[in-house]
Length: 294
Length: 226
Image (cartoon, rainbow over all chains, first blue to last red; front, side, top):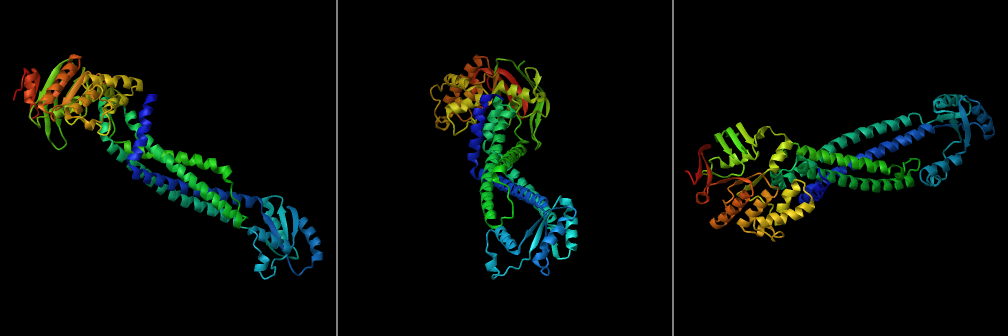
């Protein structure tokens, strides 16, 4: 293929896109929707993963102090906890402090007013373990101490998050495969229409001795353009939605940690453009397998 | 021998036997008419010769090569050495004269500089000099056929096949087109023209191959046989 042939091939591909306006539009939209859902599923999975990992590395045991003991005994109790094997640090959290922490996590809601001026939270010790494997044994030992009512350390919640990631991944993949097939079929149909509309030119090209590559390349390029435009639309939509979601989450449920768009935008853009390009190229390829040989 | 067919038969999928046992030879530089009534097999033979279709049995040889056995690359080379003109011109209606002719050069990947020089030259040769920018649909039938001829000869083919090129043209215009074909033949291109224009064939006094019911029934120099 000679370089100056692209002066014919590239404009030809764009002309064809204009020629089948509605099919072009439908193909681009299907690719956009497919890649949009793909990117959203991926974002859900990576964010849930990130949250699960953060939770796992940051598990603290909350030991709620029984109301039957007086606050003078707290320091003795703290010493007892510190003496347990595997305990790293012990921090006292008063009921007032606990309520204010909770208010912060729910985005600054005034819980005390909502609860009619009562604070139902008990005082507690927040205990960190030397490593995540000793969390379980620390919790058990703390629970046995006199003066400790209940012990919580988020048992099972990390596993639940990982299970959620798995479900999101499975549903996402199924949706993406189905939509991907639809998108590729639409691209193939669009290219078929172009081939039909330009059958006379194709015949003339064959008669005068054009090569297979020269005849096929504009159609292949047409598919690739459909894919890349679809991908770019999807990326813009994903960025807008993620920004809104980020702002919403930060303002309402601040304990959920969202990955910053600045850190992942290149992954999304790169993946979407590559996937769009491949879908478009594959769509045109299957429509060109038969019928265009010289 | 430039063109040779050996026992060529063509049977279509619907069972129609379009050509039966065709044996013919055409030398380089000849000007040959292929005549016969409608349905005699003229168009089928032309299609076999430029490899639009393949013979069911028998061989078609161009420059000694069996064209059924050509690789893709060799087929491309064969096509670059043969030009084709049809009764219905088969031009790209929305395009200009220049674009229609230039298309044949673009398709074989010639540079823009070469296209700019050669298109006006070939248009001059077919009598359409200075008409480059006109839309082909604004031309008369004879002029449109000249555009089709220009497109077919711009790559300097060794052979030019024409399938009923004067079918849609009036007698005067047909005669002018024949003169153009003679001129192309004088430049060294071998011509095979399928026609049922009896008057034209008689007037030209060239070699005449006659097909009847798919069989080659005559090969003489002079005039119409049937």
